[in-house]
Image 1: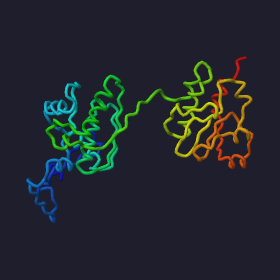
Image 2: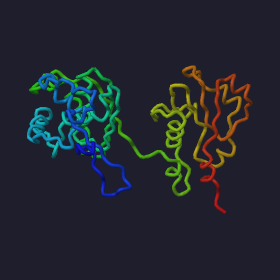
Image 3: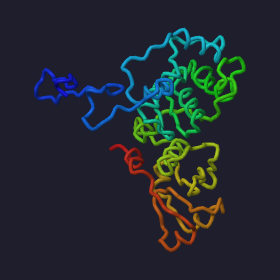
Image 4: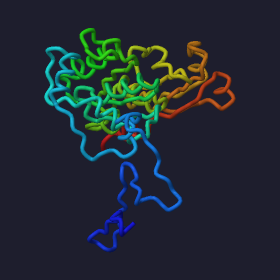
Length: 298
């Protein structure tokens, strides 16, 4: 192979040499007992060749991409949109055409990544997923999400049949708020509000989205998860924290709810495991940081 020029030695002799490979083997590369496979150039799709050994440079005129973008989005403008077909080709290459791959794009922009994944799924009935992240409020709904909506439903004036008919699929738009960190809620050594603490413990305990509209301060109910009805016994008051506990009376007063196990957060409890099981209660103590913030200054 050295004589054939298929081995390239590095300048640093401590690094391993590089073996060159042709897109298609030439006769000189084969062993004596090997035969060069017969390949009809007309039967090999360019995309398939690219998936074998992809070139380091892919060229496509930007005007083609811009025209397609205008077909989809009309008068909506975006500087330098990427080409979804090139991205789709790269995605197939790096995932070995895995139809279940998941793609993360931390700079969603005009949602080209999502468009590419939807197009791949339509082409081979795949179940690929994409996660797009975008911090620009100015265009995330009107551009990023809107492009996905249009390519999913179909663009009537598009020249491509698949795009005109619609690529199918779906997506969820989730707006992320500030990070729910207890340290942040305890600024200036103040106790967090009931709603803030409810959101924190519900999410950390269940891993599910919290809906503040479900709160019932009278019963202590703060939400239902897949496995629990969640309750919170709390007030941002030091005396309340000192004198409140999960008691048998409170357990008996809990509403029937969904019938799931009850997850109850409280300062402490005066119930044994027998009574907890009898009332379908799993007790959780309030986060310790609460008491540090509530500790009076000397």
